[in-house]
Length: 310
Image 1 (cartoon, one colour):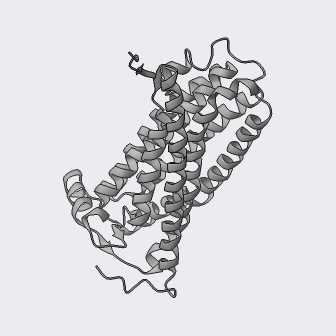
Image 2 (cartoon, rainbow, N blue to C red):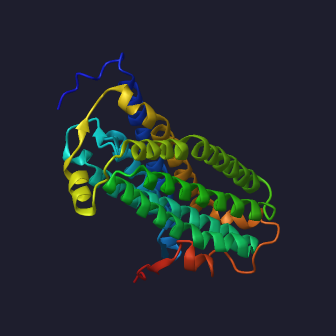
Image 3 (cartoon, rainbow, N blue to C red):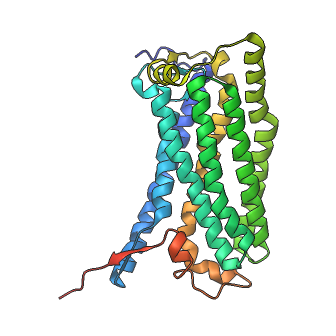
């Protein structure tokens, strides 16, 4: 494995260094959050209850999944990567991405459901149920794209991500009026971030994939079948350190492995302040956060009782 390409004159080197620094910082932030959650678990244990914090594990899957993909970046349909190793295969990378992305949207579903339950918003609650199936469909189109090398699958995948986050923004706006103070500010910040993400998808990402699909159709490109595609994505990868091959991937990868991960960490941190959300709700639900429906869906289920001391 050669590292001769790691020079400051190569833009790919600078980009990869950025990914490594950001991923290291993201892991450090997750470890800090995990430490805080462990302290909370110890407090709950003294009270006789052990809680499982699902948001922490979902966040870990996304943070470490993105870190793995930052260390070994690859472009799926093109089958290009930075390092000649089987870990750079599209099959491995896409599998990691699938798990991470599903965990990410489940985080959003949990938090949106929690806010909807406090604000007594059926609209936001229904949206929290709908977004996970939408992303499962997006993952199907993603796998279709990488197996067949058909960019139309990528265009459909990212279009579904756009629809999903449009719905999330609608759900957040629906509950925002029911909160005040720092919670309303946080919701407004999330909506603003989603608006920027949607603008990127609609103006850059989806048109890029759609344009690639049109070019392939015009050139008469032959797509791969299921078995041939699975064999190809498992065994073929082309190592390149040329900015020409990576320039169209740098923008979305850089945002994906930084800003998107920060949003996952922010969603995770809500678990630390969930007991205080009620104080910022103008018309809270009758049930407490620890009871139904929070216990049922929001990922804070009681795992068991701590052993009684003799």
